[in-house]
Amino acid sequence: MLGSVGRRVLVVGWLVAASAAFAQGPRGPQAPQGLGQPPLVPVANPTPVAAPPIPNTGRPAPQLNPLGQPLAGLTAAELAAFNEGGVEFRNVETVAGGLGPIFNDVSCVACHDAGGTGGASRRTVTRFGRTVNGVFDPLERQGGSLLQERSINPGIREVVPREANTVARRVTTPLFGAGLIEAIPDSTIVLGALGQKPAGIAGKVSVVRDVVSGINRIGRFGWKAQAATLLAFSGDAYLNEMGITNRFFPTENAPNGNAAPLARFDRVADVEDGIDPLDGKADIDRAADFMRLLAPPPRGPATASSVAGEAIFARLDCAVCHTPSMRTGRNAIAALSGKTVGLYSDLLIHDMGALGDGIAQGTAGARDMRTAPLWGLRSRPTWLHDGRANTIDQAVRGHAGEAQSSRDRYGALSAVERQQLLDFLNTL
Ligand code: HEC
Ligand code: HEC
Image (tube, rainbow, N blue to C red; front, top):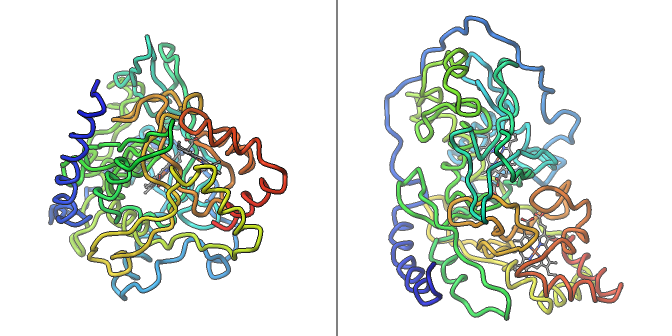
């Protein structure tokens, strides 16, 4: 274990490495060119997937809904990339196109749709592993830690293995404003970790190996801050949520680690997500374009009560972790360059005590969770990492660990003050 001095030295080293990394730009190296689309190999015995409902039906038309829109001030080319990316984000994958053999759903929007394309939802995924003497084993050889709960043939469905004694559900996070979060320099997040904090609150950066650039970066996406870039998350989601192999994740998941059932049903040649020679992009690139160019959730109007609530938010140290804003660095996309990002998160991981989900991932330990960005809070269907909170009030009362003192002071507020704080949270 590093002492606090050792950690500080490490973190200062990061400042230097991080700014150098950012100078390379957020997209990383160019995609390899000219691989072409993989041939569509017909499946010998295609088993129909249990007919998924067509996602996103019956929702308000996009023009009536402020969520799911592109960032303001995009160029015509960027707007085209957003629109093409949105088509891919909504695209329903088929068995012939590489879906499965094991997967969780058939499109990105099947899970990310609350309030508009790219939103959160009540949909959860399952993670499992085995914890012995406080050490978490993701049971990778048995297909962990992420469960794929559906399959293109019922006989090869993955199950939570008997060895697993730690099982957690994680609810879908929203993607509005994700490009602004991506464009925050690593060094800004590192500086936030170094800053002086009230007693009991710490917070550390999540260091991840970014599959896109191949270098260590500061993670910021996912409940554990387990990914640094949208393209990396996109590649991960194509493989792990839909079973589509891609240039960053070229190997199919074997059901519970068993090669034989995989060999029987994996009929599409890898890499399944090929590069389109017309524009040099694969599906993972298009989905990343869409997420990167999504506008942040709009702020609601302030009232006298919400203004009073904002002061309480600061007084209770909520704002120590839920940092009201950060700035993006220089960016090739003008709409992302030098912008203030009102995300209400320090993008650090905190020891949340009993609220931790028990799953260790990268530098995030079993009890560590990323400070959830609070923007767009009011349009979320459910709150906290497993969706256990049905109201924002329950979400605040669910805090523990480093946030225990904040939580206790929240519980001690008068009914009027508590309402003021909730009124403020409802403007985010
Ligand atoms: C089966 C449901 C499901 C599908 C399908 C799905 N996601 Fe997600 N997504 C989730 C869940 C659950 C999380 C939170 C996961 C975690 O942190 O462990 C998440 C988180 C994310 C995040 C992190 C956002 C943030 O700020 O934390 C990104 C980016 C993302 N998904 C992109 C995609 C893309 C792109 C696709 C399609 C290729 C996709 N997802 C398909 C359920 C899904
Ligand atoms: C020590 C850091 C810390 C402090 C202090 C803190 N939070 Fe949080 N907050 C978090 C983390 C981490 C999460 C994610 C919890 C999880 O993973 O379930 C979170 C989640 C939330 C959520 C749910 C968001 C979502 O997406 O589901 C709300 C609402 C919230 N915090 C409000 C507050 C308020 C109000 C206060 C002050 C009373 C506060 N927080 C204090 C770290 C903190």
